[in-house]
Length: 296
Ligand SMILES: [Fe+2]
Ligand SMILES: [Fe+2]
Image 1 (cartoon, rainbow, N blue to C red):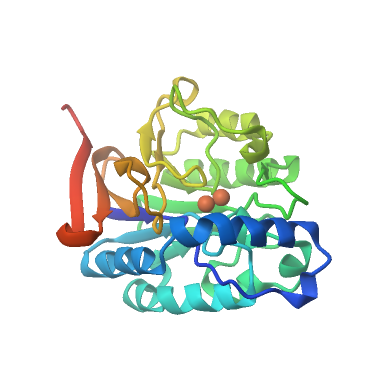
Image 2: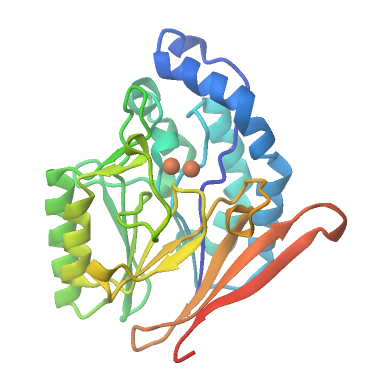
C-alpha cells in the first residue's frame, strides 16, 4: 500500500478579522504573519506541492493539520479550494485533520469554520476522533487535540480524548487491524531538536503510553516544521513520521516545502520511506530521497 503524508501548508491571508479585533492572539498572529509567514510560506510553494501530490498514485493521502495560519474564513476557503482536486481524486481516502492553526481563536472554533470548509475532515464532536477502514487489514485513526489557547501554540491531549482513543485502539486491535494513527502534534523529538514549551503537546505522555501499548505501525504528525522519521525508544515498534511543512521556504532540505511518501506491506510493516522536497528557482522541481528501507 502506498501512502502520501503532508501537512502544515499554512495558507494565509492578510485581511483583518474585524469580528476578532479584541482577541489578543489575532494581533499577535497578524504581526507574526506580516513579519514572518509572508516570506516563509510563499503561496506558490504549497501550490506546487499539491500539484505534485496530484501527479502521484497512492492508496491513501493524509494531511495532518495546519491548513491555515490564523483560522480566517478566507484562509479556510482558499485551502479548501486548493484541496478540492485531492478530494476529487481520492474521495474518502484523502484523510484530513485540523492543526492548532485551524483552531486559532475561540470564535473561529465556535463558528465551525474548519468543519464548514472541510466537512470531510470533521471529527466526532464527542470523541474528537475519526476513523477510516481502508480494507480488511488496515484502518486509519485520526484525532484532534488542538485547542484555541490564548497565546500559545500548544495542543492538549485531554483525559477524555485519551479514553476515547484507547477504546478505539482496543476495538481495532481486537478486530485484527493494522493501525495508521494521525494527530497534529509530535509526542517525541529527535535528539538535538528541542521544542519550546509554548509549542508542546500537553499530556503527551498519555498519547505516548497508548502508542506503546497498541503499537500502531506509524504515527503521522507535523506541527514542528522539520521532516523526520524516528522510532522513539519508548515506542520502538511505531515509526513516527513528521511530514515537514508543505508550504515553507527554507535553506535546510528537511524544512523545505514537500511531503513524505511510504509503502506498507500486507503484513503490517513499514517497507520504504521517501522524503520529497521542493526546489524553487532555476532548478525548479521535486527531489525524492529514500530515507529508510526494510533491511537496509
Ligand atoms: Fe504548522
Ligand atoms: Fe501546528
